[in-house]
Image (cartoon, rainbow over all chains, first blue to last red; front, side, top):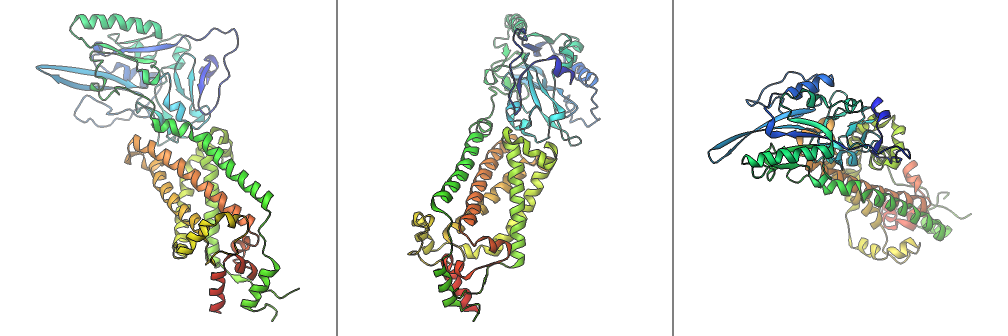
Length: 301
Length: 209
């Protein structure tokens, strides 16, 4: 991958990563900021994603809502999720662009057993490297946002790359470029947080008292963030997790269990060896053979 | 040289083939499973032709093991029912592993340790099969929730480690107790071996002929 040569790695699945060459300036963390309050639900981002990544989403069926396709697929790495939020006499149409959140502490990468199938660049982007992917689906179990999809055709996992191949040459992701209302911004994470602050101030002045930034600390923040009108209730937005974190089960599975299991196996092997060395083999004695012959009659009789 | 008893038949050819299929599939499962469990052991995927193939073939070997082990289970479960003598045997495990089992009750076809291996593997393989289906995304991804898959991953790994540990005990016992392996390879053991380790069973076998 050309991207791999241009971007330094911060993390690499099932392997360790050497630190970047000395003297090389540290990459600036980047982020995409999705301002849900400015989204009109036109799906230009979905189309741009398909186009740039040369993906083919087969024509499917509508379920009677605007959600189309109804879920993320191996081809649709981003989908708009439409929620009709009724409160009092008010109806709000909450439209959230779903896709990989590029967690700073990525659960997919933690769960991945294939060396180098999932990487995190020093700029924060989490990328799937298909060559190394074995299609086991562990990333699905690691992800707190239910994002990766496994292809039945190629047996590989797919998700948003945050257009790492565009970012590396200084371009914004395709979705951000296509958005007609500038509901999607892209830049350094610092700038995006600052910009979100202004948007939140504006929203609050217009009556959205609970407006806020979605940059969940449970995964050490994300490199895709939302401005939400109701940041106190993220789950309003088509089930956006209120407090996403890597499941403790995944933590055990990919944490203490690995060294403890190998230690237990090594101990069992060492115990056997020590037992053999100190006690020696358990042999049948001539006395046993005589007693057996006494009972059963001799072979030679 | 003093007279020896005739070799005692312990396993039929069918039982031995059944056990060999189980043994080979369990080893292949352990190797392919460990390859996907710990990054340091990922190199084991090369034995199977790479990561993709290891991932694809592991569950199929699991099906072979489950069917094969079911055969062993049906053959041997009545012989592995627990009795009072087994409790006495277990209480004197220290004497057994020091090769001082003379004073203990006479052992039938299986001693208490072997019975624990049998029941341990029976339970673990059942759990491995169940959790394995939940993790077999190629065919069964849509039948369970992600949380159930996470739980299954932990159960599957725990049970696999348990099964590997029991396997180590099982294999080591066969290495330590000389004269055992011929039961697996040829189906028979020496009279002396039967007298020393499974006297009650030996008496029954002698009584039959």
